[in-house]
Image: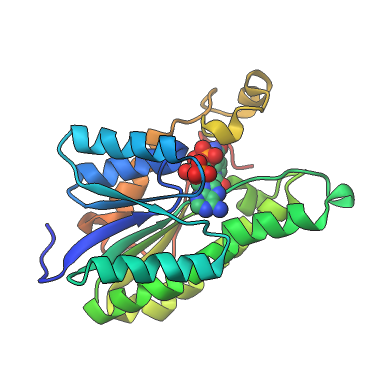
Length: 248
Ligand code: NAP
């Protein structure tokens, strides 16, 4: 499937829990050595690492707070030094947080933390990783956006802004790097059962979902795996919703 003198890796930001965990498992099952990025929950990261190894996959951990540009540079440089013959050919920008509040009450930290983690991380990581993809004329970038970035959700002006910006960036970057045979796509989940949605009123919310339930991380990981595969070689600049029909 993968041919190159350089070993190809997949980096999943926030690859330790929730959707990122499912994506890490999926990419590992496709044969990629997976770099599982996490921030603070080492136990969850180690658990995901073990799960991959238990089924014969290859993975490693990369601790790094993706909201901090200097930490990203440090982690990626360190990784390159440790893997002189490797490069990241699949990048899934998945790490994200939400800090909901109505905008009139939103403080600077709620705005900045969400923008830094969900949007600026995309810029700092992808800018670095895409250089190697361009050199190898091969790569896949998949950005995890959100229904919130497509339609806007009340209480999430910060999060909707970050996710809408990711969608714009996906489309623009796809045009920039298409000639180098790199595809850039976004996946926009609706309500997915993870720690992020744990506090929500699922019983009430699922009444508004045509398929009548929250989605699972695996259902998101399937499409990410497809977009990362050779089968998706002619798809770029797209935003694919995984939301049980909950668009309008
Ligand atoms: P989750 O269960 O809360 O997991 C978040 C993951 O991101 C964890 O691995 C966490 O690592 C990592 N992370 C958070 N902040 C980080 C930072 N500063 N640096 C590095 N890693 C960080 O979230 P999820 O529901 O799987 O969400 C994953 C993505 O899908 C996010 O971008 C989210 O916005 C998007 N999304 C989710 C839903 C949903 O319904 N769940 C819907 C639409 C979009 P630690 O544990 O180490 O902090």
